[in-house]
Image (cartoon, rainbow, N blue to C red; front, side, top):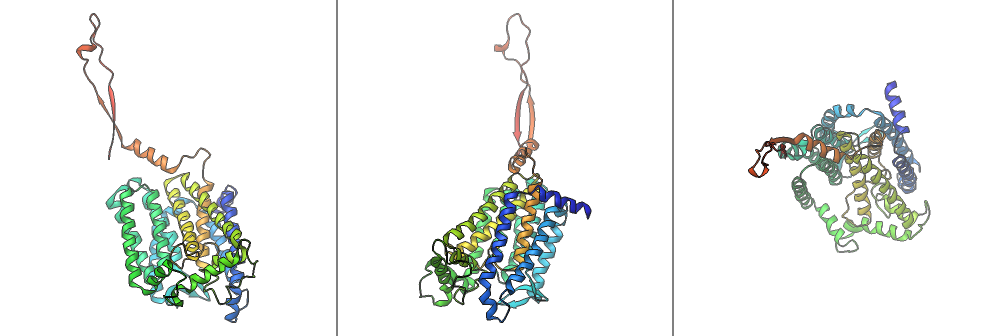
Length: 424
């Protein structure tokens, strides 16, 4: 235990300052926005006006502890527990469908003494660790059809099917994007990426056509201001755009937005970015997106210069998970993409999402603390190792030709010719 504590302290001291500052700024901003956006929601339910703020503060505390633990754990421990962690999360996804709490037509949570736990959130990290451990142990697997793409498909399809059953298509998309980022970073063939992407698009289209409300979201995206679809299909998108537009350049001021007063659905969860734009304007919205850009910059940089294959793949997957989730949420609120119902990392209300996101940042800090000043990008080191291991030297001796013979001198055999053969 003392060793782990010393490792945590050492890793935090050597941690990436930019990533740490961006994470702290986003988390504190999230607490402020949850309070501003949830006051009216709490009062409507006869709850204290700081009800959601307190619960989110507890989640931040637990997430901060998870960040410290993830920042100090030896990575070889994580590699060993990746498979059991994956199996446990798959089991929890199955159990939640049987005994989970029903809310809003979905079964996604366990409710324990008023606190909710969503297994699909922890599944995001579990699938990243599982794939990173599998492909990190042997770089050749990613380029194999049998040991690469098919194994990837088996590992991703089972949890994805259970999450779709809840139903939660948005989280399923994030799960797939995170897993695909690991597969791509592991060095898989482009053909396999195209095949996996094509199969995923076909599956998403089938799921959309199967559920009328999803099809309405696509239609509403094509014409968000139309009244032909009725209020149900376009109402949330319209109110989000009204909130963003009314904020102008500088915003209405903290706590002074009006759309959260029963106009905008889910103002403290899925639609919280609209409240950010309304109360802090275009400047505040851009500032928040810049903080996410810093997280992306530092996360992918850490992944690129990770000290080993497993750490690099984990860093790529975690960064893709956070950034794609932010893109999906902001794109939905601004009507740049169809509405997905994905929360905004660090900002939206939600305990499970907050804890998982901060734990993921802890993993990034852990990898970043172990970077060396002379670190070589993981892709370059993997390519060099693959070339050296696959190279075979074939020495061919040739006899001297008549043109090489000089009268009066002994014939000197030519130097051996070296040819490198790269095994495919």
